[in-house]
Amino acid sequence: MNEERIGIKTPEFVTLQFQLAGLGSRSAAFIIDQLILMVFNISVLIVLAFLFTRDIGFLSFTGMESLILGLAILGLFIVNTGYFVIMEYFSGGKTIGKKIIGIRAIQENGHSLTLLSSFIRNLLRIIDSLPGGYFLGIVLIFFHSKHKRIGDLVAGTIVVHERQTKRQNKRTPIEKEIAMKQLTKEDLVIEEWALRSIVQQDWKLLETYSNRLTQLSENERNGLTEKVANLLLPKFGLEVSGKSNLELENTLLVLYLILREEWSYEL
Image (cartoon, rainbow, N blue to C red; front, side, top):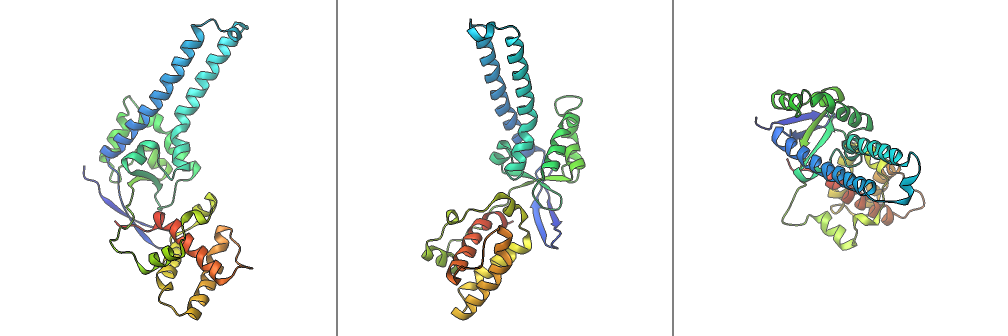
C-alpha cells in the first residue's frame, strides 16, 4: 500500500504536512527493536545460567535463588514492556528502531506524544499481537487509511516519516550573521519542558525575526529584538530584564539554531 501524505491542522491553526509511515517501515523498525530486546533478554538469561551453575557463596542462603530469579523475571517484564513507552516519550516518539528507519509516533494534532498516549498505544500491543505474530496489528496497519493499529486508534496517535531539514547550497544572511558572531546551540541550555511547550506560532515569530534582522537599521533591529525577547524568552524560563540588547539578540539567535532542526522542514 502506498504511503500517503496527511495534513494536520494544529490548535494554532497551522497546517503541517506529514508522510504517513506504512507497514514496511513500521515493521522494519519493530524488528530492530525486537532484536535489541532479544539481545538484552539473552544476556540476562546467560548471566542467570552462570549464577545457578556455579558454586557461588551468597546463593547458599535459603530462598536467595528464588529471590534472584523473581527479580530477574520482574526486570525482564519491566524492560520489555517499558522500553517502547519510555523511548517514545523521551526521544520524541522514536524508539531505536524508529530512529534508524526514520519514523516517529506523534499525536494526531501534530504535537509530541504525551506519557499517557505513549503508555496507551504500547499497552495495547498485547491486543495488536493477537492471535499471534502481531497478526491483528499488521492487518489494521495495512488496511487503515492512516495506517493505524488498535493502539494508535485508542491513543489518538499516528506514525510518520521524519521530515528532513532544509538544505541550502548558500548560507542565508542570518546564517552568515550567526557564523560571524560564532554562536552555537551549545551556548544555551533549554529545559525539556520549555521545548515541549513551544508551538508553531512561537517558531514562526522567531523565524520571521531572524530572517528580517539583517535587513533592519540598528534602531529598528534593537526595537524588534526587545519586543520579540519579551514575548518569547519568558516561555523558555529565560530572564529579559538586566540584559543588554546585544545579549538578547544573541540569545534569540541561539534559540533559532536550537528550534530550527525541529520546526524548519522541507516536505
